[in-house]
Length: 112
Length: 376
Image 1 (cartoon, rainbow over the protein chains, first blue to last red):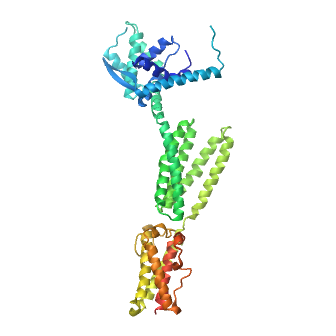
Image 2 (cartoon, helix red, strand yellow):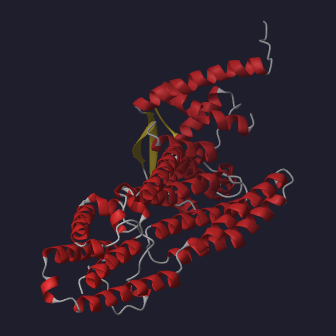
Image 3 (cartoon, chains in turn yellow, green):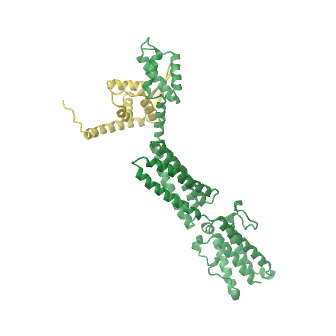
């Protein structure tokens, strides 16, 4: 498990990248997917995920689709056109950030 | 996999609501999320309630409402850049607006009041509130927020009272003094004592407090600049008495003389110019003789001729006609000349703003008096 501080700054990047790979997903699915993909190393907290999803929706980066499941309603999130470019930007920005951090913190690439 | 009954779903939704989550959108999302967790993690024969009690704390640190608060915070934060941009633009335009407006006002050019009005209104009702909202977001303690709040309130009130003073609107002085009171007795103490406790900001606080005190003190000093009511009232009564004296003198002028072209032309011009000035100044063509209380609306400002007098050209045209008539009169009667130099007739048309309305009115009455006394 990484500290929540580390995850906080990358939450939106993670969500956007997942959605660009998986078309449409709902909240719980996103947390599970991240958990699976990272072998439980990254666990998104619901307290951070939903505020982020709502604000991304308000910014027009995500669009939603509501599906009734028995008594309850499930909200599926998809990237909008704006969201697709935002996702690419976020990912490349983060890649650049990692290179800078590697240099800054003097992390030697592991050989072998 | 556990299967949730409708009652259990209702139970969860009720619990979410009772924990203070009010946004419907968020209720729905959380409900589905919690249901998903329970369905996938609870054994088919597990205990619903105890598992729910264990699950729900995953969503928050202290209480479930945090999610909603965080959402609202992020949603408003979305507007942050737009707000900051608006703040910067309105700040610059309004400051430039009322600074140029002030310059126009000094020069008696047209459009000054509009610029002052727009500039100050935008500065006090858009710029300052936005600044307050953005700054309180950065402020850490509630004490800082109070300082910002009181400061903003002072800023708005002093800006508006300046506007009211400039445009001669009512309650300007009471607003002005109230805002200075707020500055000295509310803002400064709160600002000073909150800043001085923190060693990092101590020195800064002392110097800024001194500067605020100095600026506030200077503002308080110029409070006395406003024309004293008594002084203005005295000059107004003096003018009314001159008019009264003039009408008695004119009563003694014989009809044959009063009928001459030059006499009536000079008198008519003077009456018309006085009418224009009075119309502009108090909204009436002539001064009411029974006048006691300035609160009834008949009150002279320290206004002067200028843009408005100039603009339609009527006043300026009448003055040059008067100059011409008096010139002719003086040539015709070398022994009873009406003094021209240093009188209204000597007026420099490009510097109308330097002649106050009252002095021009008095000058015109004196011309009429000279005329009436000479013709006797």
